[in-house]
Every structure is written in C-alpha cells, then in structure tokens.
Length: 319
Image (tube, rainbow, N blue to C red; front, side, top):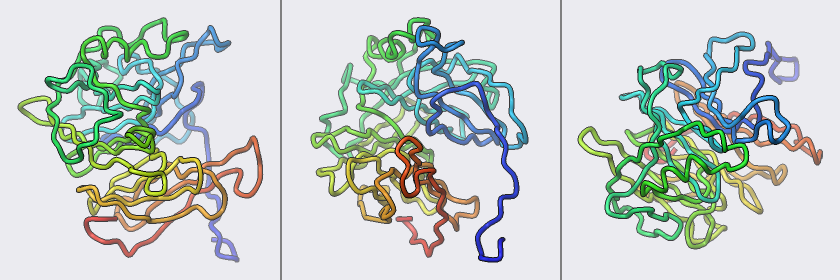
C-alpha cells in the first residue's frame, strides 16, 4: 500500500491477444477463464481472420497465451459463459435481438479444445417459443435441446445469426438480447436485457435435470425501468442471492434479487452514467468486486473505468 493508503500496482500483463470485442465470458471449475467474442466479423470487414469464438485462458498464465478459437462452441455474437461443475457442461448466451440460449457438451470434461456438441434450448410443446412476452414468473417450463448441425458456419461474417437460425429451425426458443450468465444454487441464471412487455429486462433460471432436459423459469420481469433497467452482467453470491448490473438509459444501479424473485436496490453509480459490469465475489465470499465501465471515446470523470471492492455485512438469502 502507498503512504496515502492506496494500493500499489504489483504487476500487469496481457494474457490474451489476437481477439476482438471480448465481452463477459466466465470462469470454469478447472481453473481457466472463457473469453467470449461479441461479434462475428471477419475478412469481409477487414480483419485478417474470422471472429465470433470462445477462447480459454489458464488463470495460472503469466504471459500472453496462443489464442486458440474453440470452433465447436459456436461462431455467434457471444456474451457470457457459465459451467455446471457437476457435469462440465458450458452454457452460453448470445447478445442479439433474436438470441438463443446454448449449451456445449464437451467430448472430454475440462478439455474444451477436444470438441463436443453445441445445442440450443427449446421448450417442450412450445416450438419456437418467444420469451419476450412471457410473463408468468415461477412457472416451470420443461426444456429440450436442439442440436446445431454446423456450429462454425462460414457465412457468419455476413449473417451473424446463422447459428441461431439452425436452432430456431429445429423449434428452439427465442430470447431478446441475452447477456449475463452465472451458475449458482444448482441452476444457471441468465438475463434478457430488453425482454418483457416493458422492454426493461428479464431474469431467467434454468435448472438441469439428470433424467430430462431440465426446466426453465422466469425469475423476474421488470415492470418499469425505475425498478430494473437493462440487466446486463450478473453473479450469484455465496449466500444464494443474485447481484444484477444495470446497463440502462439513465441512472445505473446494482440491484439485488432473491432466488424467489424479490428485488431491491443495492448500489447506485453517482460518479457518471456508465454501466456496472464484471461483478464477482472473492473466493471466501467476503468481498464483492464490481467494475464501472470506462469510455475512452468521450473522456470525463472516470472515463478510464474502475474496479470497486465492497465489503459486507451480507445477509443470507439476499447478498
């Protein structure tokens, strides 16, 4: 620590290069980080190679690693990834107006580079289910999974929804801009940023099942932007509550959400109008780390972004 109590920079280094527009990504139980490209641009847009992939970075890396695109995990507008530690299955969100919720079944647990099968979520008995106007929180919807025949289509450079189109053709469900995704409470939680009748956002929960496809439940739908406005990143606390980072049009809040759908205000960005992002708890659950996204294009206070550390006390069942 410095004399004024501010932390000293110990070291920094680049861990991954050669990729573009990386978004939320997510951790794995085997000690790596999945970095997700939020674009499918390629040579037609002036790049030297195709983009739209997931990359895996060991947390033990102390220098830049070779960027190896995981083609079998799909070429689409990726946002976040979450891994079920019991099975090693990876769940993936897609940030487009017509988005799918995907899972990747690895050929070898913990060895994503070995390939596997990509599938898109569908609702039993509701082919091509549209979630945007579904407003029945708590009702469990039985799930099935649609195989994606070609997870790495060459046409993605000009048609970013080529993967989604395959799943939708097989009856897959359509969501509106899927962003944050996190595993906790034996479920996978994910958010539709502008889903719902008010277009202010939805929070969904998927609970896997050993015997069938599992169930999907709408946890919360925002009735108004003053309640929840544009949910983006999220995390699950060690105590079971959800922390939701807003990326809305006005003031930017951190909102707390209980697993049964009760919402409350947790924090407000009083510095600027930039979004909260990248929320995660320390391994012992005592400290919440969250970012305020920077904006180097416009400058101004906090334009380079910052990371905040927040200590409890924390309340069981909420945060």
